[in-house]
Length: 230
Image 1 (cartoon, rainbow, N blue to C red):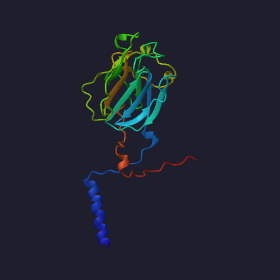
Image 2 (tube, rainbow, N blue to C red):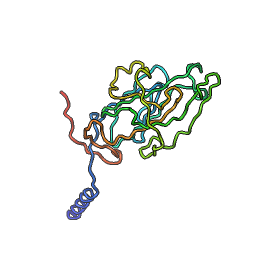
Image 3 (spheres, one colour):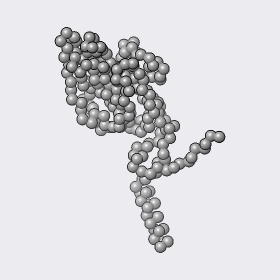
Image 4 (tube, one colour):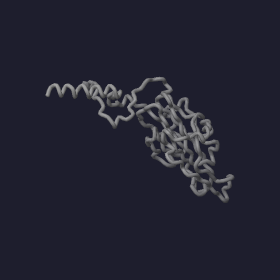
């Protein structure tokens, strides 16, 4: 019986080595990075195909969403950004005026929004800026547009806009957006819903972080317990 148990142990251990299995430890909060996001007016943020954050306020007051995320690379970031425009008229404030959009993001690994991001407009108007007889146009949102393997080669580069152009409101200035640019499609006023994508192959800050991909499919090691503070 002991010989059988020993052979079984050797087989399991050898299989793990041959399969390249490496037991990953449980992630800690120190493994996360901060994501700061500001949108005029709202957004949905996906990372590697998973919904990560949704703007808690659809219109006003303007707000910043700041959350902790567990990064893994390559990292595909996908965003649906929405200006608060009437879907029929494309106008704001009781169908009286044309609004404008704007989106900005910064991650704690140095990832920022800029013109290297891809963008596709989904809804726009009023057509020809006609506010007397306003009309809008809409495109179908591409299926699985937020996933890592989605083909965005037909999308165009995002357009950068200055802070003076977007005119962000408080509490934007209380958060770290250094190095990031406001982006949108090429029409900040008429394009009301836009999609963004950006693939980050490795952390811009150069730090080597653990990869916790597939953590839910394996039993993580307990690792060393952190000493309790007295």
